[in-house]
Length: 277
Image (cartoon, rainbow, N blue to C red; front, side, top):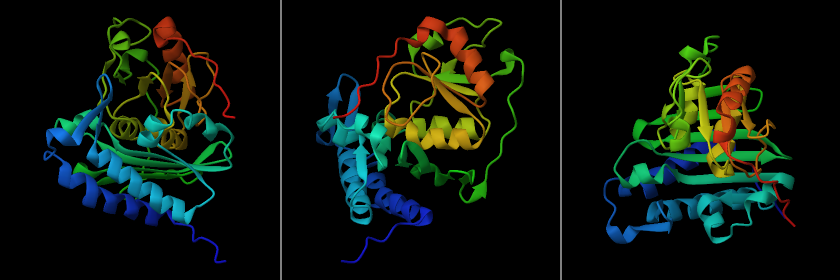
């Protein structure tokens, strides 16, 4: 039996771009009403999400038959999938169209994301922004690139008044600015846009609710590679596959700690993760 051929980092990026060109972009600003559905109140899914995830899953499964693959749409059908990532020797996360609501509304702020996890640590990550023709790629220990160019960002200012923070959560944005934190503004409503902005220095922290793996595994590796971190409500570090409410992503650990402390109860409560059986 011939062993499966592993895919290089560049090959996986090319696969993402090809699937986006063939399946996703032809539907951009061309969706019909019967190609859009709701998985839950306000949680949209399109034919582009479903078809692109199927294609990406099939390609990765052929190359890595023993890997656990957790896609957003597969999880909608089988909610028990994400906890398996906590104990997986090898796995991939797929977000076929991150920012689906933006995509449906004809806004360019959407992305295709894949993350690779080995024994609990993310080792490679890809974020492709089709309408901006921009690729962010990270390999653990090798930093982050944007269209092949290495990224570096300046450290945030020590003064909280100068920090730039974003969130999709109204309860977070409603908090009045004070000496501990400035006003937190609306995010791009797409992790595949928000994380690159933090990595490139356009923002300093992000505040999220449930850290679903397909949303956060790729971007968090990129944040870690520039020296940042993510803290959950109880102060513990983000781990791929963990579930819960309230997560602060910061360009540095002290900044993330300060934001988490300042927000306090607004972050919500974090349930204890349940290991997959």
